[in-house]
Length: 307
Image (cartoon, rainbow, N blue to C red; front, side):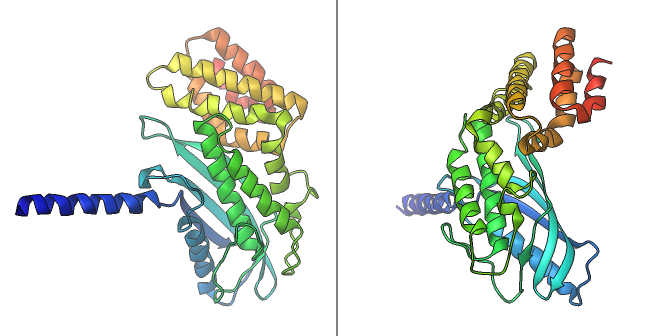
């Protein structure tokens, strides 16, 4: 009887732990904040900002899906404060790198490599970062939430064809209310079409029906390519070539979009390594010809594939 009771208690404990696991957060973010040509009198402020941004990304539940701890999406965010026009107001730049594990391996592949050169916000250590899904609170929480949904959307696109749509929709809601907000004095051109290379255009590239091959390419590249590479390298390369061909076609519709640049900034080295070991000379030549057209900035890397 006692043994049965212990088994029952153990089972209940596992179920409770499972319930907690079901609420596990989606992101495993590391945020680094540095001073770039800016001076603060209180050195602890930068550390507190870094801590608050990290907690904001990691302690919220952004979706209704279940993420086990080992499935959380890893992202690194590097914020460089370039100016402090007045107390509590910060001008900064940001670089974000998000990664995804490759099935059956310990290898992690880059999903996104993004630069945001208008990462401007107000911040006071005494005011906790807050966020509302359908309302503007402050620019910093809006920017962080926008990129959280963008990262999750890209991750979902890599596992299911167009699987990230609902998360891009939420990112668009954030963009819309942030661009028109009158709550604070935080004017941010990154929310509008003022610049051809900002978060407004990044999201529009991802959700433009004419550029859908960018997103379907993510599925072909990761799920049908990288995830089977260890067991079926030739089949994986064929899928990755198909993904790159689709991306090339989308690029012909709208050349050199921001998403295209973000993709190849993240993938150029990896693509080179994937095809360098191939024994298919014709495939290698086709790859280099394709990438010469779509990503000439990394041509020197790609040419090593056929040497």
